[in-house]
Length: 240
Image (cartoon, rainbow, N blue to C red; front, side, top):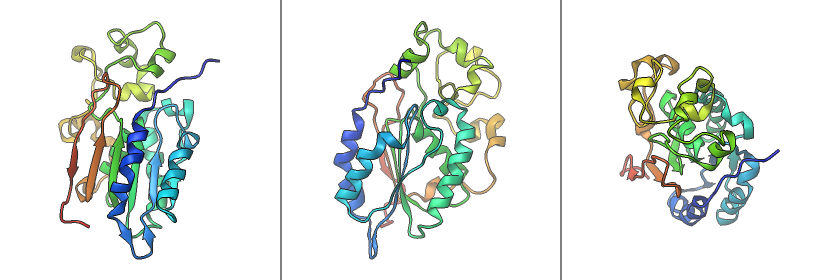
């Protein structure tokens, strides 16, 4: 069976930036733990090199790649994944009272953004979103061509906007131009949850904690067909 081929260029950029991201966050007893969330068709195996690089650059750093929804299981609905990733995330951060760094790749960037938004409290110091379609996706990526070789971006909406498509993770952030055909309660990537009341019942109660992040870094995708939001901004410049 032919396997999905995912092109990766941006992790090399992340390796260059990691020393800058982590150098100013040294604690008395060492570095903050790093949590990695993989992308679509990925798993912990794909991030062994990055994990080794982090521990080599910053000896003693605890690196955790959450082992959930690996490979084909990453196609399951995003909100189901968010709930399970949140449980794994909470179990790690409870052991790190001084905070953690969160590195999330591709689809994992959306999962991390969601789990931070539904968390009543968290202690994430830095959130790195690497090549994640934070404003939605509209294009023919390698994995889409593998899944649907006979479809192009102009016709894939017929699947994503169907009852079957609503069970596929990437259809949760597909952002085509066919607004009139989108199902009721559709959540547009890049919009705030306050603008989408139909989906608020999927969120936990409690104050949003995303504003507590000392720093936030969105790294662009090398694939221009992703509607990526590219910003580098401090959430709380006075935090150290």
